[in-house]
Length: 184
Image 1 (tube, rainbow, N blue to C red):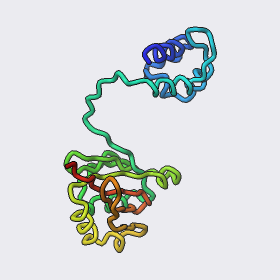
Image 2 (image 1 turned 135 degrees about the horizontal axis):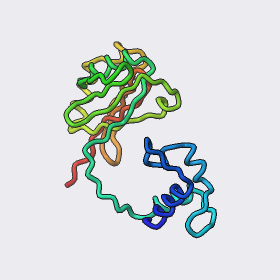
Image 3 (image 1 turned 180 degrees about the vertical axis):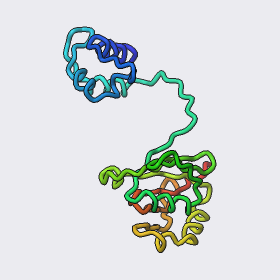
């Protein structure tokens, strides 16, 4: 993998794709187009998607020391979605006029005032809880479907891996709320 990644980076440097504001040439779409059919070290044309595929097949040498992972969620109506997540018990920190971060314990996510239909329609979040039955009952008590248009709560279902219920937020984002079977 190192040789392939080094080759990709050398192609980027050779094609002068460096940008002091953006040190990673792969973050820039125009650079990706230039790289797509650039010559690698051996002088052959290897499409960049093949190099990325090869890199993904090889074991990673990264040493992950991750502090958090925070998905970005879109919203049809930012204020309605903000109220919904506060009603769910998340604490909000407004970062700007169109961006908030919501926290509970060590879990957090960003909510944006951004409506991209295909993105929102295909967003799912899995929230692992310690007791899905208790959590589901708390959701029933909140009666969110009567307070927010489009919100749906689906009862718990059992699966081979564990149990889960489902909650659609006011924009249609699907939350899987579940617990895994305990190991024996």
